[in-house]
Amino acid sequence: MSSAAAVAAAGPARQFNLATESELRVEVGQESPLRVRLVSGTAEIFGTELPPENWISIPPRHKFAIFTWHGATVELEGTTEVEYVADETPMVSYVNVHAILDARRSRAKASQSAELDSSQGPRVIVVGPTDSGKSSLCRMLLSWACKQGWKPTFVDLDIGQGSITMPGCIAATPIELPIDAVEGIPLEMPIVYFYGHTTPSVSAELYKVLVKELAQTLERQFTGNAESRAAGMVINTMGWVEGLGYELLLHAIDTLNANVVLVLGQERLCSMLKDVVQKRRSNVDIVKLHRSGGVVSRNLKLRQKARSFRIREYFYGLVNDLSPHSNIVNFSDLSIFRIGGGPQAPRSALPIGAEPLADPTRLVSVNVNRDLLHSVLAVSYAKEPEQIISSNVAGFIYVTDIDIQRKKITYLAPCSGELPSNFLIAGTLTWLET
Image (cartoon, rainbow, N blue to C red; front, top):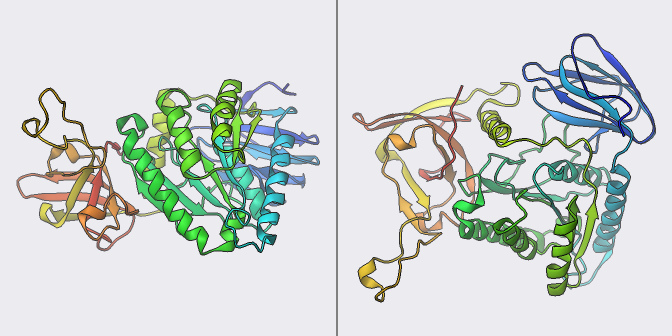
């Protein structure tokens, strides 16, 4: 139950006295940022503590909750769409999960065994339907782990929204400090693979191939780094949990060798995973948790809007604090490829009656034309075209103009200078800069 109805508010500072284990849930207005200040007591946003007495600015459209374990007084200043206090939260169960994971990390660190299994900390995968609070729970578990001195690896398999980088990617990055309430996931050294689409149904096989590539890269890193191994990983997943989505979830659990599955708010999914996963691997724990009451369901239009803001943020920063550079190059300066599409063999080479199958990992060279306008392209680290699928990406560019007559392409990049590579990957990810 909420101790106050959800209301929109604006204007001067409003003060909230939060009781023990309650939270203030807030949705910032569309246009202007909101200022937040901890007046007294202690409180946190998704596992990261608020600094006392300092105003912090939360950008427009952000949704967050300020939770207190022991009571706090908090002030808000600015416009919100929703603000209310809730006194029923699943936080105690979340922090209990953290305590168990913490003990497993300590055991893994203390293990002097040559066996990789016993020195492996928890690999936690968070699953559940769309808008069930998966990203928020991941942030909390990562921030709490960092507070205890661990450096867990965050793996994001959600191509629809993208917590680490651009939508349309799967990515991983070490987390060394509690995650900043405003800045989000730090981007020191992310490993990013470009899938290029915002739904896995475009090419489920390619999605699986990239998850496998990411898993192999992480295994190599863990083998050489006992500290990262013991800290383990927290894995965020897509909200599609039926049919193909469920199949990809099972694939991710197996490929990343997850040993703790946290199921947010879906009894049926929990039961299905117990039936299938625990039959294959008895050492996997499957735990059902309540979703937070503060989670806001978003329709397709809102999700697309959020995706567009996420792409904009990559080039311009969270609060327009970055200055991207516009560059013009010749068509011949770039080699653009698509992954997948096109049959493996012509019909004439197949047995009678057989249909040609599309190869999900076939590399197809793209001729530059007007179709690429407004595309977001990934810049590959590959040295040769055949390395493109197995190579992670350096970053992204946005195509702003194509001059067919002069054979010139104009693109926006986050920084000036030459691109790290002239091998680019195209998908179906587009953006209309407004």
